[in-house]
Image 1: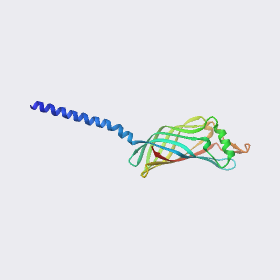
Image 2: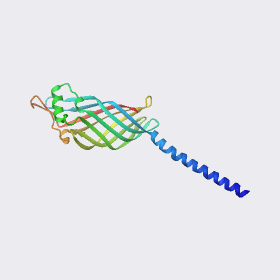
Image 3: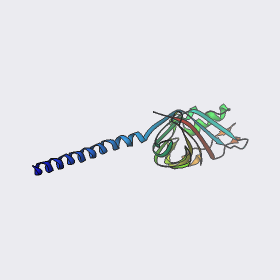
Image 4: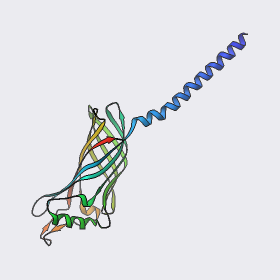
Length: 206
């Protein structure tokens, strides 16, 4: 009788243990998926700033498309696993139509419609309550030329609507992407090779 009870108790404990392990295995992927959330912006603002022999210039678009996957723990962003960005090159506008036309020509927009970035690796560092800095390494493609580059941005998680705001800037030379700095007025006004790209977006959880 005692042997039967002991055997039954052992079997019950074994089943309970197996059940607990199964629940943990089942819950782990769910928790992981819940922690990683996809965010998107269809109105990322992108501004390209440069110099010329006459004056500084800038071109801006508010039609950038950004999609990112962040790891969020509570109200803090702790990681990034995916990021893509694309903006239609001809949506970039200045206050000078001549500059726009020559910039599109330099970017060869007839053949290469978009400027884009795709993440290959990234890190997130906390900078305070709900704030962070993201460092993203990936392929930046301009005028059909792709080069690996690292960009940084400051971000903030907004607890009220669970959105993420990001803002940053990066500087590089146009010729590094086989883009000849555009000229205006029959070449009498020449733009500088170095440009700075400012970007900002409010990303909503999907």
